[in-house]
Image (cartoon, rainbow, N blue to C red):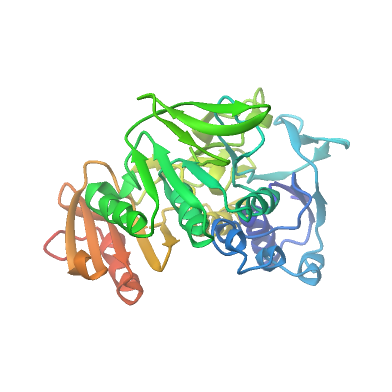
Length: 387
């Protein structure tokens, strides 16, 4: 394997490159990224960078010296435009096709938009450039409507409130629906306590605008939410458009086996990959920062011959106001929910989620010391009695 190409220069792509070098791969290594920025971390964008407590430069994953030490051909500001599986070539914007013996696909996500999303004052939050533009808009102290009740939407809403904006969160689903009604209600109460208005359970019909600038969000019940700034946090799609016609299986991302392999010599890591997780006995695609790192390391090893199934107990978290919510595992809609320790009324507790009597997920609300120990309940397929 003389040349490995990694498409995607964010956390998963960079981690794959570093893991290959640590494992002793000394062949040609090319890292392709569609952004002009060197690899940076995304979780702080909706919190510290948006709030202004971090400068954007602090999100850099590695120093220029560390990147140079990889001995890689790093091509930033180039988007992958096509893949020839048989000919073993990646086409990119503004350059000749790049040949490979091994390929890692780590192109991440593309934010979804609504009709009217091109109006001035409408923002998404995925990149450094996005957060710089959104922060500048929020500093004017406007009326903000966040469309989306998931992790990103609620994090942006919390940050905007701390910046003094008038914030409304709207969307057809309850707040943080994956965690179930009990935890979702607690998060909703947290936001109301900080002055955020919630309009959940009503679909958004359209964005309203005048003179090319957004003026509000119209809901399906004819309510108009006035807005100077609208943040769309309605989910993202795997960035697989460049793979159309390649012959790779595409569904909810790049379809891979338990080794994260899409085809011989071609693997995928991070938000873009749908793979079979043997631990839970199901296919999944995770949009979590820690999963991107762990999966990229596994992919690097498998590309070099490990043949080890990737079967993680995923970890993720969200910080909103002064509250930290941490979670391990999965949280299916039909899971049974129980408090393990503490009391939600006291703002500090741990909980478990079980399916068919087996613990599949654990959650901590301002309870970080307990969480690592509780992870073993998911890792060991513990019963309710053990929990």
